[in-house]
Amino acid sequence: MADYQQMWTDLGMDLEKHDVLCEVLPEAFGGVYLTQQDRPKGMDFYDFVVSEIHGVRPAEMIQHQKEGGKVFGTFCVYVPDEVVFAAGGIAAGLCGGSQFWVAGGEKVLPANTCPLIKASVGARLDKTCPFFLIPDMYVGETTCDGKKKAWEILAGEVPFHIIDIPQKKRDRDIAAFAAEIQDFIGVVEKVTGNQITAESLGEAIKLINNKRRALQRVYNARKASPVPISGKDALLVTQINFYDDPARAAQMANNLADELEDRISRQAGVFPDNALRIMISGTPMAIPNWKMHHIIESLGAAVVVEESCTGTRYFENLVDESATTLDGQIQALAERYMKTNCACFTPNTARIDDIVRLADEYKVDGIIDTNLQFCNLYSTESYLIKQALTERNLPIMHIETDYSEQDFEQLRTRVEAFLEMLRK
Amino acid sequence: MGLLLKKKLDEQDIKARVSPTPREASKSCGISLIVDEADLTLIKQTITENNIEIMKIVSLARKEWKYRST
Image (cartoon, rainbow over all chains, first blue to last red; front, side, top):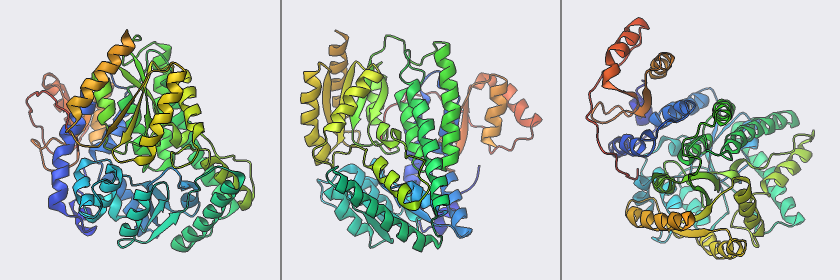
């Protein structure tokens, strides 16, 4: 095992405070993950990444910087990673999913800010996460008001670029997003010192598409009954894909998918074939937020799909690989990213269509629409989702929660009652 | 090294789980393998035969896991 103390010191981390997080992780991960039976062997890689969560990948990023490369920290599935990799950079998802960082964010943010934003700001200001200290630049976006204002605070810490996300999905909005990608290319070229060509962008498009295809295979395996992988494990795979090397991420997800397909052929599941099948829809669950999956699966139901940014929204659509000019590739990127149905759009009826379609594809018994506390957009949208799904006789419950343990027992009681209703 | 040992144990069908190092074992904040004490003789043999470098082996009491947020 490598010793990362020196690396963390060089990054200027608060080692004493960071040690508190190190102390909690083994028990938290053990309690949620290592108690599961008959997990796929392919999960060993992801267990390893969690075990060295602040060591192994940060060390690779720092090595990349020592060799002259640049690292970009991102916060949203709307940021086109392809652009960064086309310029020889590394893009790493930075969303904070830990309660540990929330207090640091609360020092500067209003109390009614969502925990994801609080944790992301806290991780940087408290200097307790290497991923937040390594990037040469942060790339934010305008998917909610809380984030927009938080970027202005973080911009005092690190060079920042903001991608403006349209609020509607007309042709002119797609054109506006294409212009944002064009601007982003200019910024990334300046930071990296490398020119992006049609050739390099074409390769990067294939690189990221291959990661998406691998994740699609893992998710397709979850359509089987009995389900060959727990929802917790599938969530962990997606969470780690946000910052792992994309080629390795694709390889590991493909290895796992091979194993899952073999399990399906042998009817080997991790839940009995009569276990309730649940979809989680809503806001992203950044690592190490495993709370809802743990509650649901501890009660004997399987989470078989996540309609979220740490689920299908991350990989469902591919970028058209046929364009051979930069203009054509930028248009293809804009069209792909604008298919992502985030609650920041109005209207956002395509998201309801997604949930209905996924409910059918994954043969779900019920949907638990979950949003992070104070996420006004997803919370408000839950009304329309409930209305639309109820009309179609799809059972749904709505939950608003944060990262803390405080409401764990209440949530468990509510979920238990919902599952009981589904069983009748 | 931890993953190499895991691979060697898998080949012999000896159960082991990759885990963050429990604090009872070390404050290292790194990787450990959690194994069954009954398999320890075979595991030590595997370590020696393959020249695998480990920090130490620590005995931990089984405990009831409880959810806690990180």
